[in-house]
Amino acid sequence: MGRYDGRVAVITGAARGIGFGIATRLAEEGASVAVVDLDESAASEAAGRLPLADGAKAVGIGADISDGAAVDAAIARVVEELGGIHVLVNNAGITRDNLLFKMTEDDWDLVMGVHLKGAFLMTKAAQKHFVEQKYGKILNLSSVSALGNRGQANYSAAKMGVQGFTRTLGIELGPFGVNANAIAPGFIATEMTDATAARLKMDVEEFRKLNAEANPVRRVGFPEDIAAAAAFLCSDEASYITGQTLYVDGGAKLG
Ligand code: NAP
Image 1: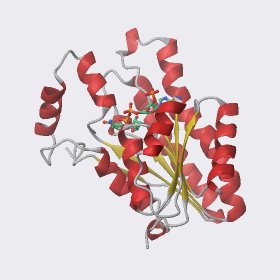
Image 2: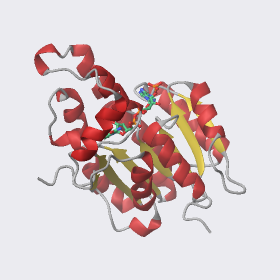
Image 3: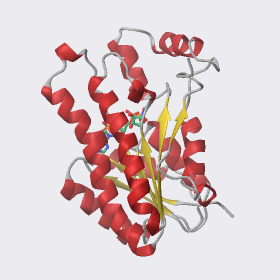
Image 4: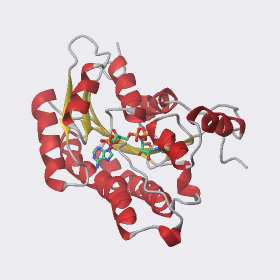
């Protein structure tokens, strides 16, 4: 018996990185999974690599989560092809880093569009089903950058916004059997942090090593670290936890 037997999970930005890590873990625990990502072929390819349990299914869906019509169509496809929806993980994300004085309006709008508007649109489309069936789990990806990070005024504002959004979902949807929580990861080794290394003109391994040395637990994080916390927070074992943000960062922000 897996904790997610008979459940359908939708995970945005799950073609790679943290999203794919969460999709893999939930599939291992019995879930059917919809991998939603910008590129449908990448989403389908990732869905095809998931370790599904007997009877579970996976589908890859191409959708830009900052587009309301695309989001509604994606949720409709999930319900039609996988037979329902029980878990939503708002994971898709982008960075457009720059110091404030060099940050463009586009850099601001793009980051807000994916992290905040995207999570809003996906959650609004999914909650109809959650409220109707009096069951649902929402997990939003915040970041340690929510606490402030040089060069990330847009991303930091969006990620703290995600925490406020999560608390409000907890208040509004709790009476309907829906839990909403957030995870704020620290440095996780993915293409997102590899791109940061490239922008800083640093070797990826050297960048990871420096980040590991600066961390209290002396290592960087991996998608599996976030997936383990996600699998708990979206499970029925966490049904008395809502509106919370769990920092999964090796103690990076402890002092
Ligand atoms: P990643 O490797 O860059 O993966 C992000 C995925 O999201 C990509 O597949 C990307 O597709 C997809 N995506 C981007 N915009 C989208 C949109 N509008 N609609 C649908 N999909 C979209 O990132 P990650 O490192 O796994 O990060 C996952 C989440 O964790 C993000 O919310 C990120 O902000 C957060 N986070 C990451 C870290 C870290 O250290 N890695 C730390 C804290 C928080 P394309 O490839 O086609 O662009």
